[in-house]
Image 1 (cartoon, rainbow, N blue to C red):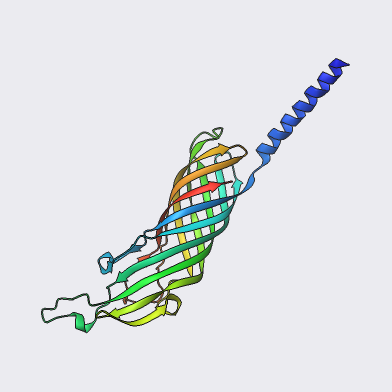
Image 2 (image 1 turned 90 degrees about the vertical axis):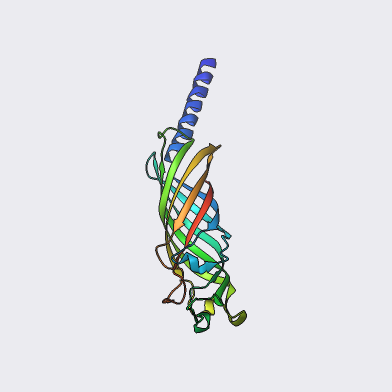
Length: 236
């Protein structure tokens, strides 16, 4: 009787371990969250025309799905929210009253940008494990693309002429507004560790858009490409 009980207990325990192991190995889709504080490092073509630039701190947060494609590759996608802020003065425009008799251009007039943008986005990223597949704690490389849509704004842009504000408007009502859609590429390098039944990772990342910050501006203002450096904290 004791042998049967021990045998039954052994079989139940073995089945339980196999079931648990099987659940771990077939769990190829996981849901998680990520938070990325970001430093605005937008790249201007004529940097000398931009003054009082402030590298402001923004934030990106996302709900992500992680799909295991292989022991070393993972697809990450989801829905993202981003907040960024711009604070600078653009002296790239030239007015006749700024040129004196010696043809020296004096910075008397400028555009003052003080505004924030809010985006929702769809990231698609590939995450590659750099260590051997069996290592639970490992380094990884992540790269991908993101499409973002600007759904609202805050703040204003003003035109200052000889020290006097002559035009002051909401950024959406300005002559050239930031593009509604942004397309960005990203790359990051990080470390992931197992945290009980979940995973936690941290990765410095860089985002860059080949598109222009503003639409239909001609040569009135300096060309700019949105760019951000951040540190992504992910838990799934």
